[in-house]
Length: 345
Image (spheres, one colour):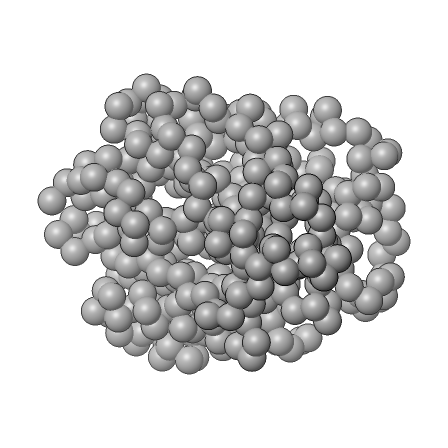
């Protein structure tokens, strides 16, 4: 996506529950092994005791709007992304978030494209701003919660520990003096042939969780890998990752070897998964340092990309003028790469 001179990220924030569960405790309870912890590299995850996923998204949005000095009534576009149950079976969480924020203009967009939701809503917001300058500002949120009743956050997937939390990002027409980051490039790609990794051999069912009481990602992945192997999957994923990185930088007018490219943030999945799936595609492609940002959150569902952008801002990982790449990925499979810079001043 060509963004011209770029769009401004006025504010990006995460909201995480204060309650945490540690990997060490999960080992003691027999839910995972020491080897699982070593392969994942996550020490703890935030756990929502009472907060719903959409309410966490509202809390993250309130933080972002407050930081930006922006009223919800001034938003021209809102979008909400998620991967897991939002608290009601037949309902629109996107409209709930917009209603709670007083975002009365425009039609809220809800996006459920697995864990690439954060990248997808960011792309939708950018497209809307470019297509209709009267929109003014767009707010994108994510929110996910993985309670034991329906999802085993520790052992329900291979090499991924799932944390509860939400994110919010306010995107508008560029204003370097007030923006936390500038969005310079954005590119997405899909490897739809790999959708079966989350379907396996399971039949289509009339209602949710008809096959097992809790979502079991290991079951579908094991069946897919047994039937298809992983060579084709890795080949497609590596090509897509290289494509989104290269295209996003090219469309931003930035060379791959530009010395301003300081860091690259990957999805907050486990160390082993990142090194097998992502590192072979992106290592050496640019001069960026690959950073680890999910040690104390685990995987935040649809929120990894905006959470990584929030961490880049909050931890001041970029000097003025420096550039970061943030990659989002999700089952299906879909990938997004955002190129951001800290305004020079």
